Image (cartoon, rainbow, N blue to C red; front, side, top):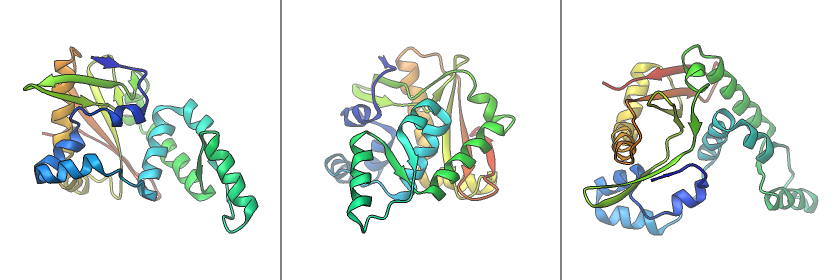
Length: 212
């Protein structure tokens, strides 16, 4: 089953098994249970990564939902402005973080290989299928019509040697396998999975990776 219009919040609330759930299950069933029961608090790094994803994959939504502004939260005026923006569904970034997101986006889109990968296809499609009698789900960052899944990752280093360690440390290979299996079981003719890595600091290096 494919749900192209499902929101990110609704996707994460769905109880089907995800790649991140599998990573917790690798530790133990207790870790998986705890991860399901405890809401994960968003860190500044996670917020920046989400913003970069939105800027690259959903530019119109980024313009509508993200603002870069300095708010003095020690004052009533600053708190009131923040609350007003949050009530309007906006995400507040500092001007420096907003600029960083724009520079990372521009680096990805200007890269001759990565930029071309994101020109055709659709973003954030929720996919559901049953594997070995277990309801599973995945949400590819970018699904191309030619069968490529493209996943955007922010990284300290986009160098192939360093990103290889990142793949192992964060279980990206498990994510790739899970996404390919779920999509194929849902009837999507996927062929390959590519990672696009973009660095979080200048010069915002970009690289494209195909796992062996």
